[in-house]
Image (cartoon, rainbow, N blue to C red; front, side, top):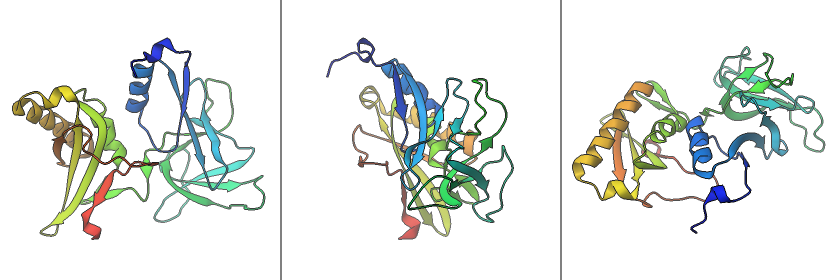
Length: 238
């Protein structure tokens, strides 16, 4: 609309609803000129406000006067120690009418009970790194959409819109990522586009150990969805 976000009085934004990476936070802050704060909640528990960033932004403080958090192994259900990543589980202390005991969120994170520089003593949960039901197993390697996003957001020539296409060819799992180009890249030569594709491919190999085919597509060609973005098309299930 031609409005410079920095000319408004907006200084802080609170963001939640689906996992986002530190790279996404940096991009939002850079584009809008605000401080982006993280919030966590679940509709089944109470909605937003289960946990929130403090000024240190080193994990989200969980409101332990209302919730008892635990981390479990999503396969064995074993309770894991502080600092180890697993699935976040909540028991509600004060919730009425619909009490929940050891409710499995499917969100993957860790808990940190070390002192926070802000002075609060509430336990902190780390950034959500994905969901146990979103995890893809590709040739024995665990892959999360958040890993792909963290790579894409570091590439200036592409937009933060992508989709993972998973298939099985000759009994071998394959994965391809389609990424939307920014307008300037599409007007460049094919060689320039291939160079960006190769850079993203190499970065994904370095991060995940998987060779993921990268395909750059034209702007606004990846389907938008209302609510949570659909990042995975798994053809193996069809």
